[in-house]
Length: 81
Figure 1 (cartoon, rainbow, N blue to C red):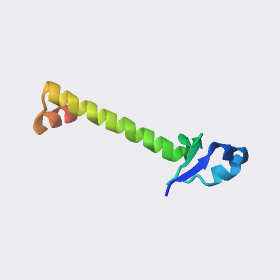
Figure 2: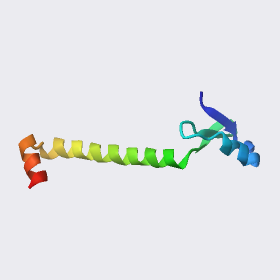
Figure 3: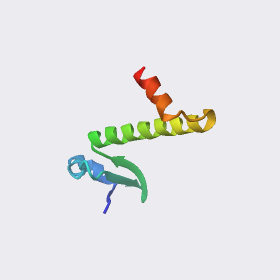
Figure 4: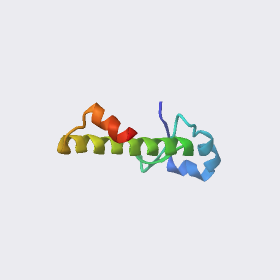
């Protein structure tokens, strides 16, 4: 279950930070609506790396669709020289 708190709980930010774990961020609401997420820095870096990887994979797929795919033998030759 998500850990959701009103932003006013930041007055006692130590308690909010204590609730943040690598597996579970704390979501802060403002005027009853989700506004911010407080998460573990390692989890943030991991999610950013995942976004970058997926972006590059999508770029590769687009390139293959637009410019054509390489045969496995040709790709191996390019990589291995």
